[in-house]
Image 1 (cartoon, rainbow, N blue to C red):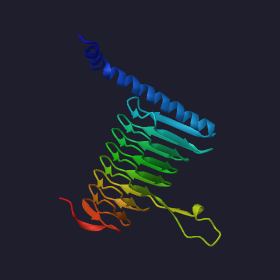
Image 2: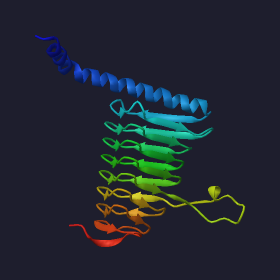
Image 3: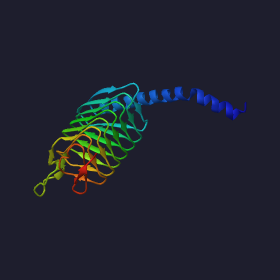
Image 4: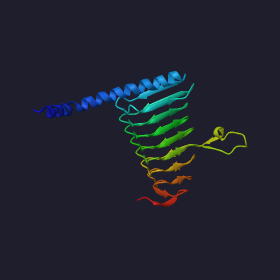
Length: 223
């Protein structure tokens, strides 16, 4: 058998084993980096990462100084390239079989819960200052933004940066949102709702309805 064929055959036989070994190594590296980040920040970090979670070597954990944090990642969940989990004194729970795709950023000061089988698409940014919930099987499109906080107007000379109001955001199960969607603080999106690409959602969305536009308005019930 030619040398190239022997190498190909060996890769086919051993590929799954090598892949699993690589995933285990990436998980160990992720745990070490997360714990080190907490130690260097004089912070507390409680970790519960399922053994079969798939963690990219380039996924990062950022831990803010002197905070207490919880991070849970469920079975079969994938944390992709360039994902940033910024833990700022909150609790982040990601369910089983969920995908955090390339470049997702989760900023967690409050309580953020992402359900099972969820897809958070490339470039999504989530700000969880108080409470954000995303139900099972929901898909949120590329470069969308979910924020449960907003900056409010301040007198001249008073920094807007520190003037923040919060209101929980709840997204139901089996929803679909197109690319570039913005969910404002205090919004509830009902189960099986659809949100058109580029929509800015400033009011609650009824279960099973399609909304679109800026600001988003009801279009029709999704059959």
